[in-house]
Image (cartoon, one colour):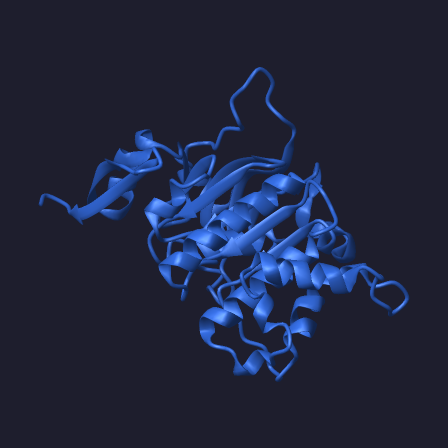
Length: 288
């Protein structure tokens, strides 16, 4: 029996509520993960169960080192489970054809490094590589690249070289790359790891809106690793809270999640009403 199956106390993550539960686009049962470089003698992260339907938008939160990026790599098919099962569209994810998967799933990692001074248009165009036909890009790739850059608030960077950009500009170009990858399909999976880091507050609002609108328009499922609790309450359907050890707890993206978030981070949270009618929080020291 895998080590992580002996300590299974994670709360299963429910599907959307409603008259009939939608079929899972992504589903895990008893999922245990071992981060790259971790000794095989060390206990893996997990276990966790999760269920994600097409079109759902989930914010993944947790303290540093809890395993959020490791989970995202597994959901991307880049990391095979140490134990348990992880299915995408009803079949084991890590055994699926890589090209077919790249046409349904796009990933934005934390790091935005590119080894060479590539033109911005080419970096974004890499997102269209799963759609190459006999070594040639599809005829509509150029407008997709332009539109993806515009959606990422980076249209003015089209003629620039990637290595001349600031960190925030590079982040927006890489976001445009994942937009371009799933631009012409429906019902895909978009996985983004800290997509709003290194951006000023105005751009954070604009790009969060763009991510969510893009996903809704195409019925893509969206999983976003975030550190800002207020962003997690802004338009997401659910929260996945990852505790140290890699176990997940599911919460609604509303005030009912505040006690679980306080326990997760060891802080106090006070709910405040936002001018737009949404929920905001103010964080303070525990016991303060």
